[in-house]
Amino acid sequence: QVQLVESGGGLVQAGGSLRLSCAASISIFSINAMGWYRQAPGKQRELVASTITRGGITNYADSVKGRFTISRDNAKNTVFLQMNSLKPEDTAIYYCKANLPYRGDYWGQGTQVTVSS
Image (cartoon, helix red, strand yellow):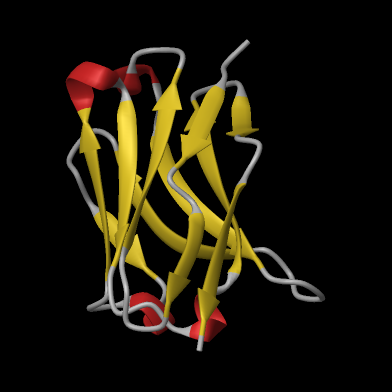
């Protein structure tokens, strides 16, 4: 069983920053790709940012390009999401996802991010 533990959410004013962490219970090199998704009330879950663990290719939603950065610490099997210049519309529950070969997707429990105006 793969476990993903997210942390770092909270309440911040517009224009502020937060850094989310997602720690995996297995080696990050056993994972095809990791990503951050978010779901706001009444909306569908959407991709925020993702990274291919071998090669380091990253992908961002247009709404967060230039403001958010996905990175990882291979030694700690952890992926981060640095969020700068936060906007009220970034308010959502943020989820970490790992895609494993032959085993599919695993999700974290989510962490709440609230941006006040």
